[in-house]
Image (cartoon, rainbow, N blue to C red; front, side, top):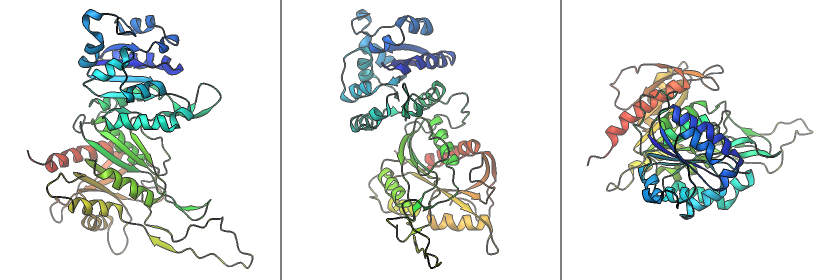
Length: 423
């Protein structure tokens, strides 16, 4: 694959040398295009030695080959790392002030940005607006890592590790890295996948909440498998105990109602919706404005719970009610069921009832408990479908949550092929 590696003018530019090595050792041909500012951190000689190609920052070099047009036109993938606030702004504005921004305007293939800057710069409304513009045009903008920055500060804005950028950039190009090992690699290329993950928290007062044991591990694994399959991934995260996957478009929520709003906002522009978040069935009827105190008379407070909306069922219903003349989105809707059996029914029976009640296209069924599923690295699931033969028992799939995620992506890809409207 022919890759253009753009290097922005930040101190994290030194990490791009390791990223370049990862691309070249994987067999890709890489043309480095630094900005003039970045050469104050890493010199042109370093890029030429590591890439084996001549390197320039100017549109006036190699004019006979029309570099400012040719490089972007020929590239299978353009990766910008680090992407500074200035570079993101120039790219969003469509400026062509140097060889790199000219190349970005000419890019015919996927474009991938790995931002790096101070936290306040990343959180600034102008930067967030520029990121939104770039994403709306189809570019992938990776979420920066959180950690120690150039000085004594820490926070979001740190350039992700080269290995993470490498995997996420190849996924954006519809290729999986060797480590991903997904049999569905490339099968979701061009599709938008929305994944919900983690556990919602329902506030009782300013310091307390009702929550659940979900760690977000399975949702994160699904997002990574979808990236490896070539999809653009929108990740709606409630409380997570694991890092958000690199390369996703992040939407953060806390409560079930916030999750509901985020899912409905995303649904119309989503091809595949995977509802792996553990959504609270109930929330307190009142959220106290001050901390609930112990009472001097020894009486206990009474907390009234109210039912949260059934988000999965609502999305299915809205799809069914959509205009018959338009493509009904999401094309594939996947639910998750965390069940415990009892004297009335088995886990599988409860799962089948939930599938019928929810109306989704696939249902991932887990048996849960204190030492099962939540927070664990391994699990066992059954994937149910309305197309299952009556009385059949779906095969249990066991393994790491990454294994389960790759198997689920395979099933989703198959279901998507059946759901795609005929031309």
